[in-house]
Length: 539
Image 1 (cartoon, one colour):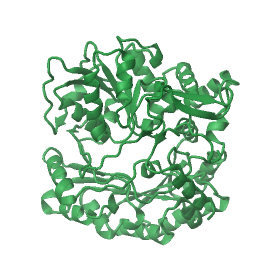
Image 2 (cartoon, helix red, strand yellow; image 1 turned 120 degrees about the vertical axis):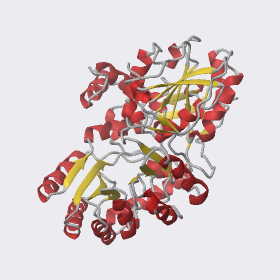
Image 3 (cartoon, helix red, strand yellow; image 1 turned 180 degrees about the horizontal axis):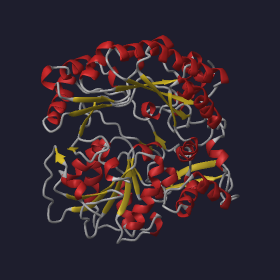
Image 4 (cartoon, one colour; image 1 turned 90 degrees about the horizontal axis):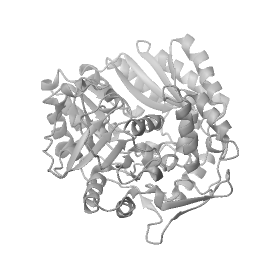
């Protein structure tokens, strides 16, 4: 493996020299360097570890790594996309670490993960990790290192018991899950001893600064980009949305006190700036931020924004974007049906979508990307037709813009009001129907793979029993990237030993079902999620 990737890095922090007795950590991203180094979460935690003298950290990606410690004590993964699980299994194999934590001995490092996937639902992977970090890393990483230091020389099980006392650290082996028969529902999730907490609460960072890039490199997926997190979570609470519900409350650091100084730091080393967040234009001081970036001294800056809330895509914003070398802007509209958007809790009208397109064209942008979804609960064929009509109306309003429509299938996510609802079995047909009616009209239709959505749903609603499916599918796959057929084959082989695919993916669960993540507490109690579910289904 070559290390040429690291040569082009410009660091925005000062790594420290590790103490002679520092803890050896491998911090891994289960994808290529180009993808991993573009993850703000990965950059942030790596810099946190690299500035602690008590730690010696080496980075690992699927295609390259830094020199690794001879006997690492911790192996951590930043895990933000479900289907990357196969690369985690590949990493364990390549590092000669048993995949199941129960097969590891004192000579193996403790294996942990953090990020969006384990925070949402770690249960499908519970057998592979010694512990998991649930929630925001800001305090969690430091607390974990501090507690680990106290028990470095203790036996493995004692280390894990102590770590389980840290807020937000989950040790799956300390909990027993019982089922109503081999392929039945969960009947209980209990700690194995009375001194172990019955529930683990996801950690929420409450400080007034969010993350910004700690490294800039031309080898990143967005070459030489410096990223600043403008907002965390989203106040809109669309009923399917993990990015909103899992990360509440909505947090916005001060423009003058935090964001502008962060931007200034980055623009000293690059002229490419990315503003990130699920709902950045809802930052109360977003105008101040825009006016700052619009100053003449930043004329050479290339600005990219994460998805923009449709009714905040003003003419002024479009003009600033196009003057800062942005060609396109992205808006999430979910559907062209007003009725369906109400069910989703998407506060948006078709006139506002058309106005956004008019502003994008008048502001000098050349493309508008819209995102939507099929298979939404309560959806009817007429709703799909209304989406087609809406897109054609947008094209008519802004004929000079290249219009693209990215479309996924609804996937139920844990900790959201729609976690109890299944995937639409006709989602694939709906995507094909859109393709047939949009492509000939000059709209660039970009469907997400329906087959991938099925596996995402399996993982997002899975319990511990599906780890055998995931592992089998991985073993069947020639290049260790399982395809749809591999999962079907795995379910066939395990028939009668675990619930069928339909149970996890397509079934609607009752609200009194014991969920696989019942003992892992998100931002809102189940009662609130049930109220949101009922209000959406009664519209």
